Length: 614
Image (cartoon, rainbow, N blue to C red; front, side, top):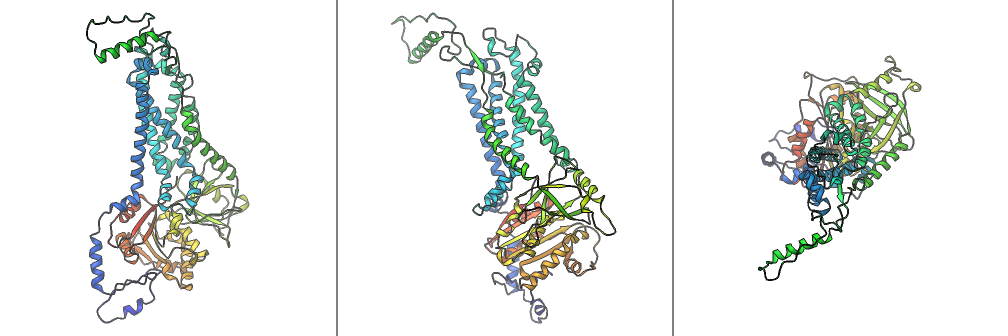
């Protein structure tokens, strides 16, 4: 039985006539009073299939962004490619390098575009400020929640652009060596015919800076793999900070440029004959001149007459800084703001160690405000002086209680080191910790996430897997400590899937107290609780306290039937917008996403939101 069970269930169990199934929605007052009608609905819903509109609403942004961003990169590449292919000032350089010049400059335009925009999705404060506004539509907020995906897509284009750029410049170095022209030596970076391409690469500023940037990019990409991030997060973090060096090298990459352009195209037509004697005028009447031949003759006359001096060349001016200036100012300004703000020292009120390698930190910071679903960044100088880690708050500060809590899963080098520091002052007998000897912690945040929108829907479904319950625990604590009538939320489905039964002990007291409060305020229908255990042998659960007995009585063995759950929500909320929030393993998220994309005859719209922060 759910926590939101109807009070009339016992009366229905005593009926002796033909069974009648009643689906009652306390908010709408609608019901289906016959078994036949409900059976028809079930058969009809079983035929519901894939919905293109639902798919586009819940996941189409990713594919739309990839298509649009690919188009922008292709346009940038093509614009630069044609510029270097047609403009006269690159005539002599194009004669030496050929197609390699156009390809290298086209890929350079792609790199400029992506290196400038890759910083914007990482402006956490700016994104949180935008999504906090009440006037921002839910579609825009969902796009902002995809900042990590946008960052990865842009990084992929940087890798592709770098690969093309490096290959093109390698062939350019070979072309400089084998196409050395003694008539125009100034345009060629090679000193003589047949000079080693490796010497050209490793003795020029663009070559050396390019090789260093390539090494930095390889280090960043390799340490960004999931396996490295999970086991060696510190290595991943430090390698990512090399982006500052990467940008410095990128700006210096064009100093003493290898590529040169002609500066005197007005006095020396590119490719014209080097002579001051004009071509002879054709004798009139010698033969009939066509319009094209006349045009060619006048062009030749013009070309030979304006070749008054030798071609002069200057290094190609780089416009990389033009792309980087605005994003760099925004990002550096935010980092400076976060740097000064993050020096707020956190007071550790208490520490509790839970089952399944999870510890709870009770923290306090003066003048700190946060909302359910937001997360903070924590730093412990005794573990790492520069490394920050994100953790979702499981209880936010309120008017009655200014402290907040985070639950940390012991996984990885940083969390293990923090646990070891805390256990040095931990007394297993009393469970107390000497607060005077606790390590110092610093905080940065709070930052917004998808789970903030739980209270923006009339009906919300929160599905958690394991420690992914943390953002939804903040929602339960907020309902426990605030006035539930002040929120737009009228129905909350809370589904928690765990491998071990002991995991539910993390928030047993919270669930029990919230259940009691809702019954006392005559709102038991606000929360529908369903707990599932997927590991261990099936057995009867008996708690030692009243809270444990209440929670364990709701535990079911096996995986949740998501299709049945969504069908129930569809029946109770026809034609409404339902917020679906999931935080947990990838397979669980995929199953939930699939159910959200189903088409249903009752026109209920499921808005899929996945908790993700990096």
